[in-house]
Image 1: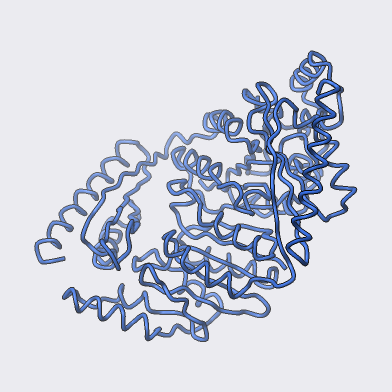
Image 2 (image 1 turned 120 degrees about the vertical axis):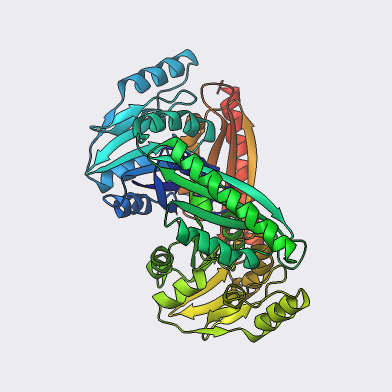
Length: 257
Length: 257
């Protein structure tokens, strides 16, 4: 099963904010049994937001977006999404009641900016915002399940638990573990990694990350991951391959790298 | 002028690594006078990497990618790019000499994994890797200038200075500054922000980021940014608008939020 992540917001493209939301969402998706095969980052522009969703519908089973759910002029994810797919907006009663209560309690005016936060696409399920105000959106187009989450990390995170419960696969378990290696070049290890990947024919994925480069003291993080129909199976094959890597490294050390 | 950022690597999609490269590249592009209008994150899959570049050629003036330049089987950015656009690979002599020297010095074997790091698209300029081994790539397709950088942050960063020198616009200067506001809701400020944006008709962009949500103690970061043909002009208009925002906030406080 495939998943995609959309991040909405100029602050991400500008590098003002580092995209930790996409990382947290990607992590949840992997550990729920999905492959994440595309990430998109789009600015606060109606057409770009609409296009981003459009370009992924039908290509992945799950889309999770974050960003653009607040009260300001450039919080436009819900309206852009609804317009792109010609869906009317409806008022989420529970959210509206909360906004009205808070607004009156503080003797503030009910403005269109406040009302906007209660609008969700008709036919969607509102995901309760336990931290903030605007709800998330749970919607389905064709075979693609779409979750629209806020950009404020604490709000996004609280809704991620809901998404996880809704989509977690019962027959796909991801496991990963890594080992740190000193004094062996990535290029020296590379052919052994290729051979292992071939031998395990798609059951594991091995990736090495140089922590310091070839030029200086080399350190490598070698990560092994697997997905299987049972958690034990993923874990066992990862451990088996990690043990093989450690043996290869010992041998390479003995022959002088 | 428009720019796009491509990040290549499963570790980013998996959320194992937070995408700081895209943030640093985006920041450099903004401060060089560009608008970044799309970010893509793709896995270590030949077709996905090729498609990512293909989908942006002609749509933006500059593409900067990071990731996939090392010696392992899944470091495939250069070959995927070259194959997608039917460009032959050539050996970069300088890089090859360095790899050969280092390899012989340590009495290691020259393998195809090591040789791979010296390959760049024919007709491209090699960007010297002052930290690591594999060079970056500077190439042009139609009107789009393409920079292919490594994923190791220190290596990427060293080449970013080269990219900046090559593309920095002489007539487009970006400036931003922000102010932190306590005790005013984002929704309360929102209509004033919209009015300011209208009044300055595209000369400034104002974005508010809630630091704590409406539900609790609210704090807002309000950021004002501008782009102009002279640095002074960007800076002045940003400061002018920030001063207006501070006045609005004072007034809102006096009337009780």
